[in-house]
Image (cartoon, rainbow, N blue to C red; front, side, top):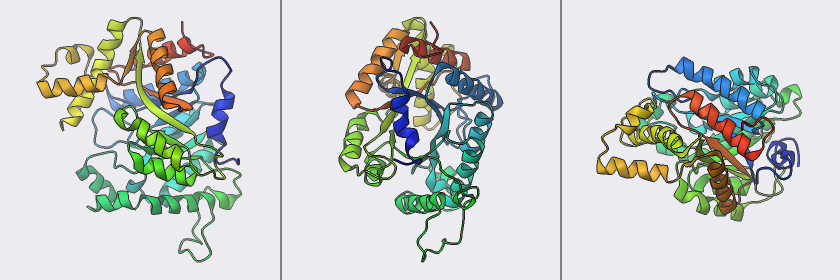
Length: 363
């Protein structure tokens, strides 16, 4: 196994025996709560990255979203550069960059730059969804051919890997084009590439290419097991991985008591319900969420969302995460916590780390 895939497999070996059954990581959406600003949300992301590093979480990813008032992470590469400057050990990456929104060369240059700034700490997670609505996606791509963008994903991925590795065939039209920083400067490694998905398409593609796979269990729970089965069944060993390596994103929040935890996760559930109803906004306060006049359809959306959020006391969350890891067989759990304020999110990560006995975990 070479340097391109070492970040995935080394994660299991790095975890002390007798601690978590799966590696624990963080997905930060840089959420903006009612009464807060994007600037405050991004400052909170720096606090979280620093604290996650102290607590012993393995990696922290940020995700590309657009035109959403409640999410400030529209530019993962820019945000990752800032987080890299404020941390020293934790792996940082995209969960993910939406490949159809960008020219592959631009992504290769951005993440080659990140790898040069933070050697050995950068992951490149790629998705094929727009990370936005159709009109926003068209504005990003300067085209209305959105369906074709998703269908072209395998070709775009091949092109991106060619730029990252500097190994286009002699007859390829981009054989004289180089991603800088990149292999042309004699770099010894490039960021590990992950495929992200919420269905079977990327699962099968990741398996066939022998790449690590991240599944969005936190918003597509019903498809988790079929996608993981497809990934493992289609897996072919590669220069990156000898065997499948999968993580899942999971919504989780720990608090001192069940009541407090439920009040916090309800804020994220209401925000998601509003998004699905076509009215996205900032994360509401616990008081707003509890006083919301749910229609029957809205109540069904919220209850369905909450059914897949692991929340409660630290011990209850640990048991829930352990059970999820056992049911899915994944090597890594990437925890995302959507709540109104950054303090509740940060405290949750501290409590979960403490429940698992991680080095800097809170009691």
